[in-house]
Length: 286
Length: 273
Image 1 (cartoon, rainbow over the protein chains, first blue to last red):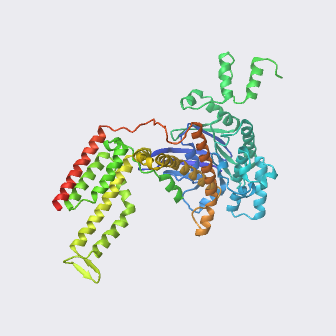
Image 2: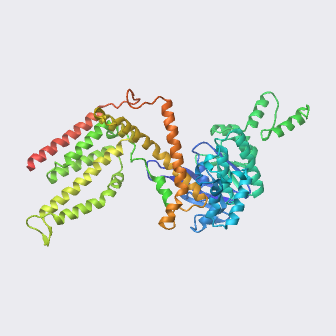
Image 3: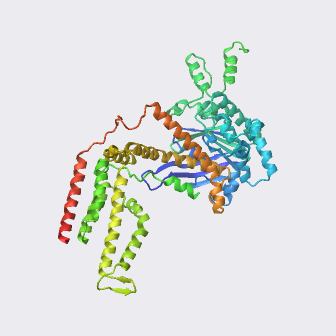
């Protein structure tokens, strides 16, 4: 599903001494089946922006249009909308509440008033998709490890079969193994379920590895929206906004000082490797 | 959606940041002044006395630069109490020369006077304490209360512990509100409904919000206790402060202004007697 923001602005606590403009006149279109990486400094309005997509926040002015439907125009459309937009919050494991993993994952589908059999199937599939063993079904989510709990929370959102999936720092606080597993899972899910995915992250390596587009926010405005290669080629501009570049880009810059020039729009180690092999000779099997 | 909007708009306490003389006064002096002010109001005997107090209060509000609507907002909760007090006192006070009388109900000059005095007193009382909470940060307030209650420690009153509890509670209100907001949004995204349905089903629907909230509150309490112990917290004895409350010239200005008010009220009291 495509997402279109039209002159969207959001003001927190209007008419008080604490008034802040979190989103400032955003007009932007995100196409269907895009995997968007959303980056920006803390307080740049990333979370505020994405919370408009399933009407958790209402625009102060402007519109949010999803598949040609203005989502704030019709109150009854809300339920339908939330069925289609899955939202994984920061530290989603904090939202678990049920006695068993199975019941917690079933919470969403149950709210959709699906038949029992369908719920059971969805729970099973969601668990498989996030890589949870069927045995944990009957255990309490509170006795699982942090990484496992996060998988449960993610499964709870996946089980609703959203067409748009929003993830707010899905790998924050995970160990490197857990992080890699999470990213792999997201990649697979995006491919298999044909979802539009928006992922907020502070790890540029993740963004470079997964995303088809990168959206850079600064002070409530989207300043760059382009392919990762083109975005990360603008290292200085990103640094000025307090943002980083992926490790591979850093490698390219380091190699440049040794007179090995690799175009900055290369993003994976593999590509760097073959570029060097091709242009600077050497053993390709290394 | 209503609940979330409420959550978003809660300001902590009702502190209105500023840099006026009143803001800069020592919280202890302010607390004592407000306490005396409340006592003083009950000694006012005439309308002129109330006029003086009202002018004084208006003057203080002007110096604080707090918009008048914030002060009026604070009066909203007592609006009905004032009305009821006024009506009851007007109707129920017996006296001479009634304007109107029916069975035990009568409107007399004495009743009217008593009713208006009481209502004015109530309003002034609330405005007085409003000025204190609007111009003093919550932390300043608890600090002030702790120090003022210090002498009571001798008789076993846990002044420090009370203040510490208040400080921690205040510190965690915004944190827990944020947490509530986030969990609520997360569950709403999963199709939870917090707004419609019967009372019982609505109460049941709160479970997905309350369980995670309790879990996280306990977790935070645990972490905080650990962090405090790691920094050798042992209660109030022997503890020094980073920001020591100090009196300044502003406290003298404030106290002087208040003394003028006291003098005028005493004059009013003598004249009326």
